[in-house]
Image 1 (cartoon, rainbow, N blue to C red):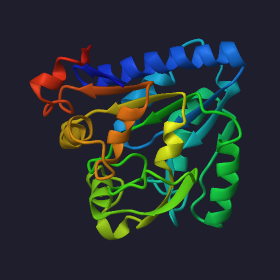
Image 2 (image 1 turned 90 degrees about the vertical axis):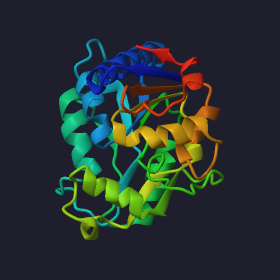
Image 3 (image 1 turned 180 degrees about the vertical axis):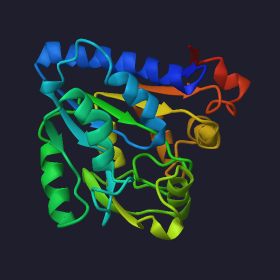
Image 4 (image 1 turned 45 degrees about the vertical axis):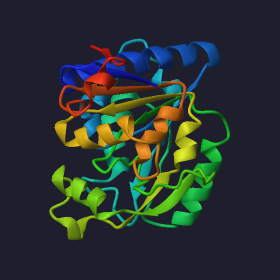
Length: 253
């Protein structure tokens, strides 16, 4: 795992997008297609804005999956991840092959069908973030590090749900769904390359816990340290609590 520290979230987004673009072009050149996993949330705004502006990516040959989705939330709701990805990634690039997690109907059927598509061919590149509670996708602590199921139905903890209110997606805690579909931890780790995009000071404690503490289900994103081709992009605020000793081994931008 490599950690890169950028001066702010705009430069973080550009740096991550540049690396993602190189990886996508390489996959497209070598295999004729690229399969990606896309993250959502406020932490991904600058990254997706930069990525969708990158030149020389044949998006028509890119196949997209997403990490998670709320159960019972209409696609028209501002917090819907399907809506988010359509507006911030798909409409800007022309991606046509998308596997959406529809949490409004037959959830178990959606989990089965999208899981089958996801595992049919290896994933080239996964974009992920880290929650304020250290979650990876919607795998809140203590996360299940053992299951081989590609997607799970999970219960969202209060810290996770409060983060969604804090980011402005919901008016209050009572409006945040309590359940979601989430890609499993082991499935995320099966991606050939992982880019973890984590700006903002509100993520600083989670960054410290995940990258300086033990690899633990209580700090779910700490598992990224076991993946040989992960790059974590931080800014000055999200990296602020890392110790001087840790910073010696970190690449700065």
